[in-house]
Length: 242
Image 1 (cartoon, rainbow, N blue to C red):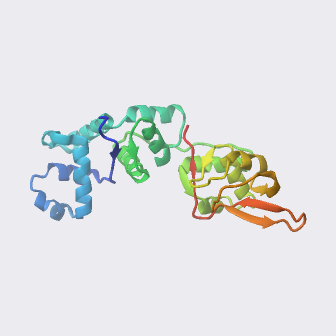
Image 2 (image 1 turned 90 degrees about the horizontal axis):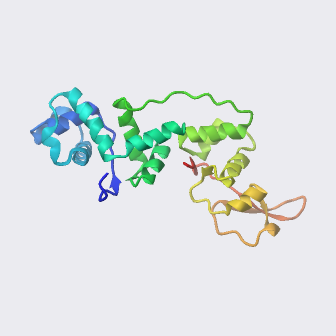
């Protein structure tokens, strides 16, 4: 990947329409013939410019040859060989979050939506496939972690639907405190949560930072003040890619 390219955008691509956009000579008739919107056309043209640059005149007229060239260009422009090998060797789940983090590690800035589009494109080109994996676990905690790993990023409300158990909040905070998952925006010191769990005695800490994740309450039996870490239904929980 050239050093001057910091960020790339990849649209969801209909392969045949993408081929026609790049090979049709009369640009004014492209939208009419293919029945695509102006926004889609623009995204296809920009993506084609990224991949083929000034070589667009050399795009083969054969659709099958075009697919082979498209695959070649993707691997030239992106460090996909290194990234996909690492995902396979580490048995990492095939999702946009893992792909995004590994591409970032190799100097590529790309959004989650572009990563989803890239995964879709790679599947269409037959570069990758996803196979089911058996998870055998005796603990709910491991099953919850496996679910998050498989999804990459998931709303907390969806986790609660998948695991409708009373201590799901405690499990998520425990996984976060252990550094196994990330909850964007949660700014409580992890060592505090690791020591005390979701309910933190106020007399055990000097000061907590202002946070939307903190709710204070008085325990009725002991009369002591506690800080409770609260995750909202819309908050995202995502894997940490190592």
